[in-house]
Length: 630
Ligand code: ME8
Image (tube, rainbow, N blue to C red; front, top):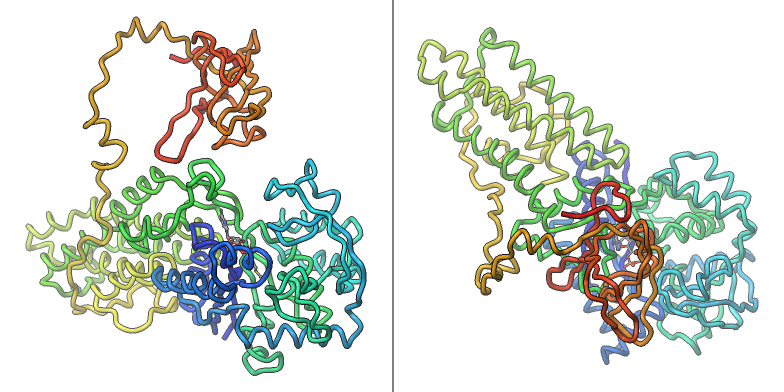
């Protein structure tokens, strides 16, 4: 039996669980559900990362102890995963005794082996990232992540001799093309390893930071948060020589977001090598979600928390959207409109309707029992469905080996499409009106029931609740198995119940911002002639900078083809200047010039907004600056 041990990042307890955390955890959950379905010996770990400056500071700000703070947010994560139906076998917290014990054991082992020494370090430190930045990584004197100035810190610290593993690590990665996937992250790491690798500072003086695991060989220091956190993957299994560690550790795979590739692909293998532990089997890196084209951030107020969707549309719908919409490894965009479109098209129409149609047909036309197929009636179209189901199963298997959830779902939906077309072409309700065609009808209904049974297994990793309802409606007890995806296993005579309302269609919003337009006074009409007086043009942003002393305004230099001009736009809270440069936008070109905070603006930039979200209008095809908009 193959063994499969999968981990998610352990999330910091300084923010509540959001879409990004949920995606990684859901994708990992879909993967382990698939491996369990295939019969593997599976272990699935998630948890929370609770030490370090950030958490200590957040706790102080909240007026509670770091432990109380961590307890509360960690519980929020645990409950969120429970409510989303995540099937983790364990949940590790870095403040647990079982974790601290292993961290201290690993540190002691490395210390005894001479892998750690005391040295002095001076560097540019970002308190947000809790790490030092190299000169090369610093952008305009600031942390590229937090856009905050870095602070120069000099202190005595313990160092792990990471530099000595550089050549080994390069060789290890080069020998294993699949170790870090997708390949571009592997290339990025190999690129980084072309420069000399520094030793890793693995301690923080307690004078600066109390909230960490004390070093076993010098309790004036606590362990650096990454050194502490990475060890969770092994500490959760128990003692280093425990039965469980021996069983699962050699098979460990990590799923992480693209923000934390470096600690996982560089520090972690070196730490493992030095500690005499196997290096992970693979590192699977996911892309990042943006929200309606923008970075998800507290300051923009656009952070999506799962209950906003799951409470209305169910866990399966949210899961399906995330897994289907993101090409694993690349970035993707989340929007309410895209969610609704996929929900209605794929879940309500394609899957929900099919399940309701087929079960209703079997209940109404065959007395609620799966009829026996007739060996000679309609052999061609039945073998067509059989082949379609086999294609879906085979492609799902290939896709899941690549962590390509979107491809697996596309393959399953091809099959759903084939079954829907089969209902349309065979018209069982018409066959039922012709008693002499009973054998044909039975054969068609059997094929439809069998198709649903197959779906009730193939869908388990992706929409587990719907899959359970399908199997229950088709009288399929017991744990589903991929080995049952063999055409013809459905026993004639199996009772079938109608399954309705699996994914009720989302009707167009009647409440919310759209409705306010109907209750607000109707704007008076504008004649076409009047509208034509407004000169709308495509413009290209050449330069963008903040307007001094203004929180909201950006000064844009735009090109209208023949001329350049300055436009002041109130979008500074929504766009970083660098994000706008090179962007095509739409402007009102003949607006009376106006002075805003001392800067003359010649024209107006068009943008749409809904609540806290604001988006600048952009043509969706290549149009030259100056092109007329009408
Ligand atoms: O980095 N899109 O924890 P963290 C997709 N504690 N995924 C996202 C995302 C987004 N917009 N935002 C966050 C840490 N994520 C460390 C990890 S592991 C030993 C220690 C996901 O709470 C993604 O998986 O900042 C990312 O890697 C993770 O959340 C970071 O979570």
